[in-house]
Image (tube, rainbow, N blue to C red; front, side):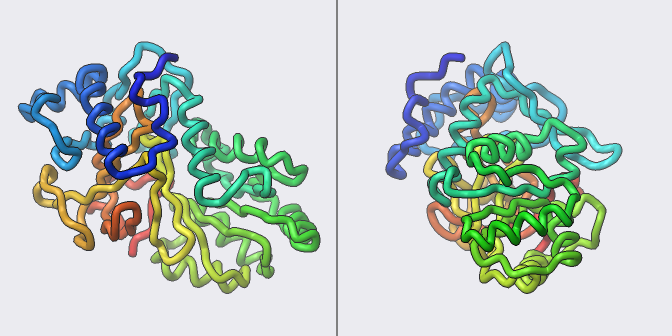
Length: 328
């Protein structure tokens, strides 16, 4: 799959100016190549030539991934689907070149956490594995394989085996990443509370109706106590994106250089708010080069500075994601 020339070095961006330049080129490209985005812009009366700054770019409502093929190409490598809830309509992300996703999540992980090969990666993602089509499972599977550690893997709900493996990893001072959907981490913590001195505990959100919803503070307090760790890390990603943001504690997420967050006014979706004001989360994800890089999510949040933000919850009456974020 060929990539636009301007995209070639997108994962090595160095400055805000470089990001602005790439984002404007991505907008011009997708406003012509992505049919559903093109139609949306036409309804708004906006042309590519009329946009000279990223803050003027309209964001495509994320709901279009449920009803339309958001794609610039004719062929796809893979289709990622949202986990959803019973009776809900799934989002579908048609990915034209899955190697772009692999480059994105690998580069992002190493940017925040160092070489994948330094870690043993153990994953508790039972519900995502059962359903299939999860971009999170795809990422975890690739990172598990690249870690090349004999104990890396998916542990589903085999908590006794996971406990034994974590004890072994602690005894050998092996750096470990315990990545889990929220309800599974809580289930494991309640059954096998244990100190994890060399382990990053990372939650991906998601109760999936299996447990009572908790605030992020309540969740992290429980997990920190159970595992005797100072911080609980978090991953922010979704089916409709090909990049992730990570939090190393306190619910403050950081984005990689090719991803940015913009906050929109909840009453005027085309109006952008300044830092430290709460509103709807708009995501610029340049890794989405073959679909749409400008997504208006149904999450609520607050931007703190150029590359950090908080997630505060979800819009009322919006569909609940399978990987829903916790309500503050």
